[in-house]
Length: 374
Image (cartoon, rainbow, N blue to C red; front, side, top):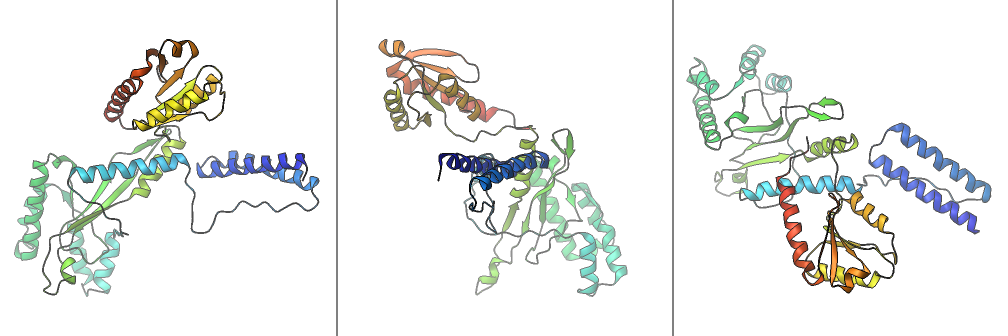
């Protein structure tokens, strides 16, 4: 194969990678089509060079999907936040498939009539209650209802709701709770309260406000564990499932609209050199920082350009750079550069690890206390 063909095949490969990245990032169809046209043009050139070229077809294996670094970062961050909240409240981790089905009233009404033998009139009377929602005052009002006050199970349920709302008040979240009688689940094992987490405010994506709605759901199922016990012992249980895919979709849409940025690298320090022939010194410092538990990176080119090294830090969100220079090293010094402010400080080479750990700790505190993406 000629050198010309080799170069052309490499261009086709690079263009194919670009098309896949654009599709994964959900770029506009016009932009994707523009790059696909370039790809087809390159393939046509290959056909002219080789009378029997190998067939080049972009395919994704069935049942699979690729996630680019930005998408993986979003997924990892969301899951880590969820796990952190669970652990904060004493939860332990398991991994299992979960199905939470919400049933609209029309579907529930049809099931009551066709499968449970409830008359349409009775179902409609139940529907009058289903349309109600409120707080503790609604539970009090329903307890005084002529029909419900005669039902033992209704009284037990409403008393339980009042107690739950009281506990929510003690936790300081009463204003975030709504008692909604229309909520129903499509699974039979629930024996008590069921709940749903809903984003009530629209999310701004680009110039548009989009409604997200429900992102989690669950309930209480005291009898479920007892089904597997020989004595049918009742065990209090509650569960919740979180719609992470919906959260992923919202964040990916905000990313595509330019509303948020995603740092795909966890590296805290980049070791750079301002002059040639510093590869070995950079490698020594990287090894030292890795040994100290500091996330570190460097260019693996022998003599990288300084501008390219700093641009790499900016593009990948690396906050600090250690810059090596001949004159500084002779004086036993190195420079630490803050990438965002572009300020530089000379520090003793011997105290590099200690100084970096101190600065990284300050950066971590600022990141934890920073505002969430709007």
